Image 1 (spheres, rainbow, N blue to C red):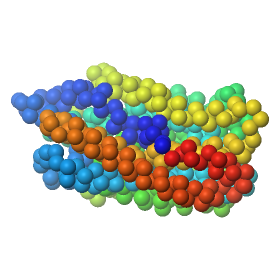
Image 2 (image 1 turned 60 degrees about the vertical axis):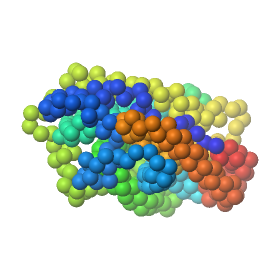
Image 3 (image 1 turned 180 degrees about the vertical axis):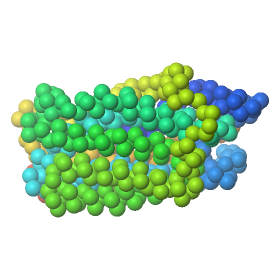
Image 4 (image 1 turned 90 degrees about the vertical axis):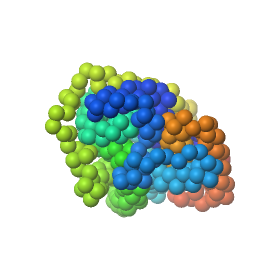
Amino acid sequence: MVEASDARTPFAAAEGQGGVCRCLVRRLSRRCSASAGLVDAAETSADMVAPAVERQSSAGAGEEAPPYSARHEIEYFFGKGIALGLSSLLNWGIPPLVAMIFAGHAANSAQLQASLGYGRVWYNCTVLMPCVGMMGYCGNVFPGCIGAGRADRIPRYLQRGIALSLLIMIPLFVLQIFSEHIMHSLGVPQVNAHDVGVYCRLMVITAIMTVLDGNIESAFVNLGYARSATLNSFVCGIGIDIGATWLLIYKWDMGVEGAALAQLGVKVARVTVWAALAVYYGLVRKLFVAPAGSEKLFPRREVNVFLSLAAPQILSNFAGWFIFELQVMALANIEGITQDALAAGAVWVQIESSLAAAQDGWIRTTSMRSLVLLGKQDPGARKAFRLFTLLASAVVAVSNIFLFIFQDGLCKMVSNDKAVREWLRKNGWGVA
């Protein structure tokens, strides 16, 4: 069974940091409360810990979350989990899998799929993992602001999170220039290493858009617009991504350049949709315009908070996610391995990652509800956590049954190369 912790999406990873960062969030919330003239910080602590996604709308933001009950937990699990799971699947699971599938039906499909697999490894390890860790800043301070009744501080936190992330990422963006030579020195065949260099240099712009997209989505979700995240992922992940990938990889046979440009188009579209939704819901000033008298963009205290939230998550990513990515690099160093076997390995790892993305909704839902009950000091928090874990395991088990049943069809779908299909059939059981 694929462990979601091994191939976490950005928001699954950010949720996983809650236990490490909760004391810092409390500190931020108390500071917000003091500046607002609130005298009893303890009264806001329960609301502070609970993410604002718990609230269905801004109008109902003051409603208290209900206590533990088995019926409510089941309804909450499927109500929130399906929406957030679809959002993650459409955003992080389906797009790269679709690119791999179309690559499997292009000319010289085995080489292209292997190159995309190596490109994915380098990009995730040197760009996406640090980006994910730094998204933890906004993901943790937003609930503190909302819980303390200081939503007016969100624009400055959002600006700071994006700006610091981009500044810290500059050396890693420069590193992409040398990705071809580094990957070749690590044992990747020259033809694949060249493709990795082309792919990753183009993906630098995509990474910038990813920083914008991820932090803005965090603000929307914490303000109670979780369904907007699903809508954005559906429009861009299904519509734009599949269309662009089909056109650039399958129809025009642009190879790794087409895959990178398709991802860039999706991220630009997602940021555009967020801007449109902000206008529609009247959130432009609430999200992007810091009120007069706001604190400076880079006070030393806040920079320290940013680093204290980002550093543990980045280290956590390299302790788990990084090991997951090394599977493809291990294949490259097997003596005598063929391009067909490399392509099958790249597809196998991508399917693993996509399945893990599908589990993200259950992970985030479990984390959010457990934190709400802990913040309320509800003795049912432990029961809720156990119930959510059992429900998530049951859902994953059912999905694995379908994976076994349709295994042959899946192999045919992902490649037109008979040798690649045969390798996948031999090892496909390991995905479940």
